[in-house]
Length: 239
Image 1 (cartoon, helix red, strand yellow):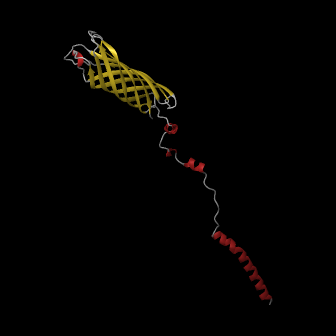
Image 2 (cartoon, one colour):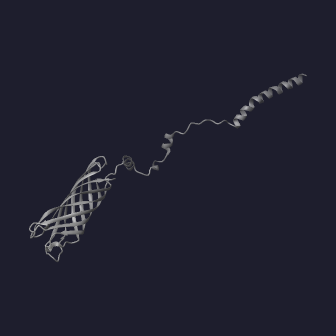
Image 3 (cartoon, one colour):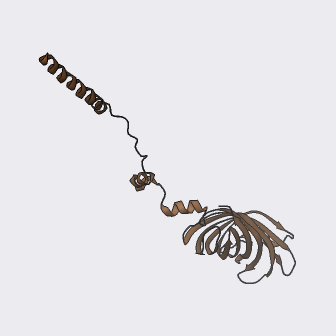
């Protein structure tokens, strides 16, 4: 009986130890899920490469501010005063009011840029002796260098200067007499220079236009007849 009792006691102790040990083994083999903290978004942002942005910082800030930076498309138009004069002053013309209207495109987000224009213009003069009136209608295509000063923000105030050539193609004329000089060349080259102010996309501009070619039909006169104009315009830039 002693042997049986001693053996039973030892078996009971071993069973108790095994019962206590099994849950720990089970937990070791099948660990319960551990809640983990979500990844730090700031750390993720820091881990991303800097090249993930395809725009330079200044371009991004420009886009977010909505700045056109002086580059865009717009319209301008206004008053144009024109005169005609012969090189030997043998015939005197009085100046005559006309008009100009058209589109411009280009400019620059920096200090210097290029600007093109497509303009329709009415230029003319009147004969001081006979009173004959000449009106000439042109398609004018300037290619201008634009120099910017001051702010180029769409909400700022900027000043600019322009200079460069303009190419005139005559698309019509109106002459009130049959004077010998009623015929005019269909093409002219001008030099253009001017100043403008842009305030929150609205433009006020003055420019001088100096014709460089003889516009009288050469077989009718040996003298050089050249055009001179001054234009005062207002306009608006769309973007």
